[in-house]
Length: 106
Image (cartoon, rainbow, N blue to C red):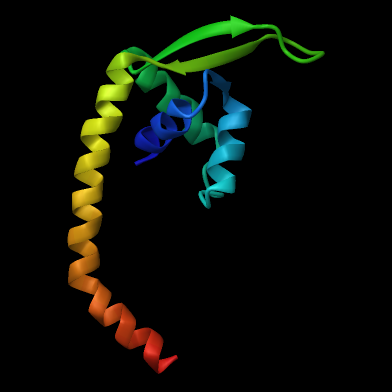
């Protein structure tokens, strides 16, 4: 689900770079995502045309690789986002009642 989450973050911004994306994922509750997982996912998104990449000046340091969502990426986000929402609703229906029971016992 990482690529879908990355597209969701990039859809909210004009462009972003890897470290900032990690921060947004962490802030959203996905604190276990590591750079060794993030950058290959971004590379795959670039290869499939879901993101464009450009190099820009870094803030007082080396250049940064910036990522921007493309129309292909927006279409993927819409389609896979809708599929994920249906899946999550189904799982919620199947386990929700049992989760409520478990919380009541705590």
